[in-house]
Image 1 (tube, helix red, strand yellow):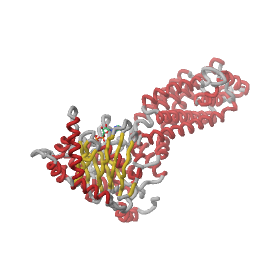
Image 2: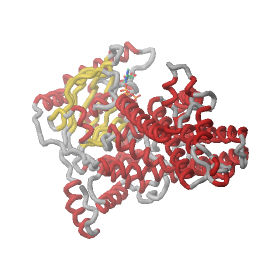
Image 3: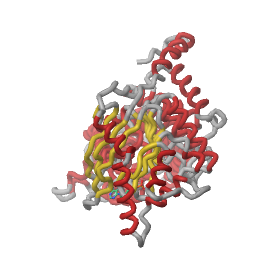
Length: 606
Ligand SMILES: Nc1ncnc2c1ncn2[C@@H]1O[C@H](COP(=O)(O)OP(=O)(O)OP(=O)(O)O)[C@@H](O)[C@H]1O
């Protein structure tokens, strides 16, 4: 564990030695042999694909659309293979790593996913907390170093932004930020999916140049790429052309031009070589048979060529080398702290949600208070007070659930990615997210209660006010846990919202206000104990009617008065602590159900 008590200078000295140690690059050779991938319908997406790449090399996987580049990249990384049957050997320094390949490699994905409310610097610092098991001085220095390396210093204090919602950093900066995150843990092996897509030619060159620099430091880099411009083509150390799920060529960019020339496909003068080669390897709609015949001929020519032979010779003479270095990961509590910090920052940068919740609760508090203003304790008034208490419970429930139902679905893609990258344990994320939401989803209800309590004229001994606050917090937690569980179970926000309606109505119906709970049919009575409306309403009623303050005739109030009111709703005074325990149990059980649902869902997302 990092020793946070070290003085900055000692820590900085430690960084020098650590940085040398941590920035050591272990030479990595990746080889793949007889890779075959089949879709569920039996279609072969990859057929007996072989290849390798060595340390210090930048390799480009190329081919026409649908050639199998992404499938090969995913197979090499053991990712996104759900529904596909795959076989063959993938080795890292001659060692079969299986799914653990993600523990020794970085993966810069095409789709950029960040927390858009954070600045570049904040985002990288939190990524460093999740990726570097060192003290804060070391992490900060590594972040500074990576920002310089990736040219992010200029935009370090800019908000990242959300595409289509809030303008932030440029596309090129976002792409470099993706690489920066991966480079924090200094991987010796880096995969990149379409690193130049969506960038102009200048930015694309900039990114490929960056990859070249990473490779020049001894790293092994494999990326898929769509038709690189002529000046970029020569920047790759090796290129692998895929065609119809097979290897059409593997070798240097210059050799690719000669090979295709020899196969009868001379790159026309002033033509981009990769563009021409890809057009030769494409399956054109309407000319499928002809194109497939041409591809078969090229694939056979490659297999019998020196280039094809070189691949086979290399694979057959492959020996086990040095074990790759596992990327460092931080402990459970450090993960929770880093993720909670990220969530808090995100919530604070979105003050609109908090403002809307507090405003709504203040308005509702005033509304309930004025509707039942200084209710008299007559039989009719008592009935009104009971109505007000039920209204309070419903209000604590509805807006809380509605507010939290976006809990997961918006950030699920980012969480799924980070989880599968091995950045954190799912429990860390879940705990951090719940803890970060708790203050907001526990305190807004208090505003409503504190505003309406004295306006209605509820009995307000100190003890009663405290109990009411506790009941409100527990009710909001029960409703939050239900919203979170639903958002983890349902695949989208609209489905979450749609499924919450019947649950809320059912819980309200058995809440004790619309009918006596004891008179429900016996086979359905148990449902009331799963309803926080019922438990909270009973607790608030017991709290209100067990004693009255002097201003409301407390001296003449008797147990018989209390029981007469409670029994009309099927409630019992001894149930108070059972109700509090019930509310807490509902919250715990629903949080747990949410976690299990999230675990299933995230595992399926690999
Ligand atoms: N899970 C899957 N189930 C069925 N077919 C699939 C699956 N994944 C990929 N394919 C098919 O396999 C072929 C190769 O897809 P892949 O995404 O690897 O191609 P690509 O070369 O990366 O194409 P592009 O450049 O357009 O991204 C395509 O025809 C695609 O439809």
